[in-house]
Image (cartoon, rainbow, N blue to C red; front, side, top):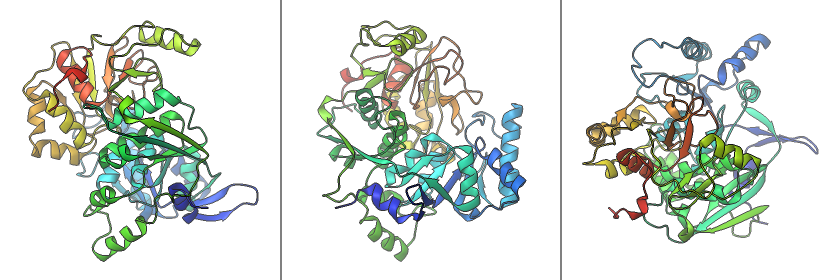
Length: 461
């Protein structure tokens, strides 16, 4: 029987198997940041255990870092201490750190792919659930808890039960203005937030094959929101072209040799999956969420369901929405363009193409936060920074920013925020904040209008 992409990568990394039990999986790359690593470093210190492979670890500062005046001392005491601890631990254990101000600093799931650290066929982990982003390269990538961070520090391996396999196929032609973010929000709205629990998901079909790497990363990033351990897309020429020439990618003959191996990774035709879903691209439209989990999604010109369970009723009460209502024309005071889901240069190019020559509504606080220093540099070089500034957007420095309320970029209680991030949980963007997930295009259009507008009515650029 043929093997899936997931099987091929997983099986190549199995060090040993416990009889009738879990397997020991070797980890190629371990990404760390300031939030989940301190406790793991402390545990190693207490037990007198050295870091096994510091050369396979890459650190960055991103989660609770300020996105303004990063050259100044950090005001928040906890954030300051966490960043100081990360610096000290990396120096002590000889781990590469891209801290605040470094030209390679950025959100961990943005800077690692753009530096060529992420490559097909790898196993990658990080103390962050959205590590699934890296699966866009045909990589087994998933988030781990603090105790598992310690395991990888100590052994460069993890003791794991192999997840089951799931495939989501989308074929056909997407309508104008439908983005990768809309595709994944549509999928989650249809199968729910628990459909992927216990599974590793592969995305297949021409819609994903035709996506850019940035789009594939957006899709895989949100795999965790349907409960999956992670998501993957088979590497192809689009993948190889993206990786080639990046700082830490193989060079010359080594790259050609790597590509020869990467071409063997796609799922065999006779491979089978434990569960499958199929969708038609023509059924997908720009999406919005109306509730407090990413599965509560509707088409931009659709209506909120009339009724649901207790969770549904509680979500509508929190969001101050009514069943049967549309979200079009809902006044919005905050727009956030950023996060590890949608803070890459392609996302900002799409937003800039809409806002060029326009100005944001007076009532809107429009925050634009690049995912890395390199993206910030591209914004300037391509003239997009000027476009956004002329449109009245507040450009901030790289970081996780308003995706989560761990830094200064919080949404006030009771306010709506149309956000390009990945989660709309209660309080995710600040206590009492109300989050509506959307694509960069929908977020940009909202900022200009000061309310949610139907982008499907816009002329195609």
